[in-house]
Length: 180
Image 1 (cartoon, rainbow, N blue to C red):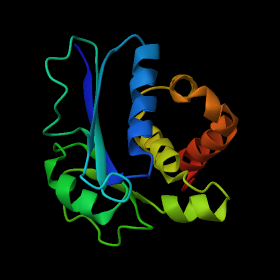
Image 2 (image 1 turned 90 degrees about the vertical axis):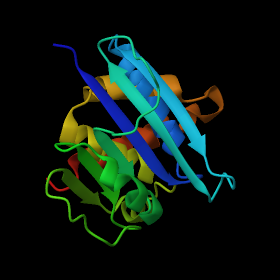
Image 3 (image 1 turned 180 degrees about the vertical axis):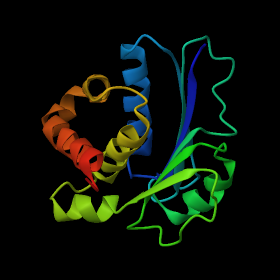
C-alpha cells in the first residue's frame, strides 16, 4: 500500500515556512520518495502571509496542489483560521501557541500547541520558531526519521548560512523533545 502525506505550512512572511517546507521536501528525497514543494506568497512578502505545500509520496504525484492537508503547521492566527478546517479527519496540526491563543474545536484531528516563538526567543534561537514547530511535527507524526530530517536540513541550507546549521538542529531538537 502506498503512502502519501500532504503538508501545508503557513504563517507570516519571514517566519521561514518556505525554508521548513524545503527541509521536508529534501528529507523526502533523501528517503527516495516522490516530492513536490510549492511556495505561495501574499502580496506583501515579509510580514504578509506565506505558505507552502509539500507532498511526500511513494508514487508519482499528480498535482502539487494540496486542498486537504494531512499535516498543518500554523505559525500565526490567520493561518490557523484559514487552514484548520481543511485538515483531513485524522490529520495533525502543530500550532505556535505564542501567536495563536485560540484552541481548535475540532475533535477529529490531533492539535499540538507549542510556544515556538517564545521558546526560540528564550533560547537565543531568534527566527527558529519554524524549526521548533518542525521538530514537534516530526515528533508527533514521524513523517521521516530525525536523521533523514537533518539530512534534509543540511541539503536545504545555502553555503552562506551553513554556520546556522547547529542552531537549526538545536531548534528542531527543542521542538521534538518539547513536553516530554
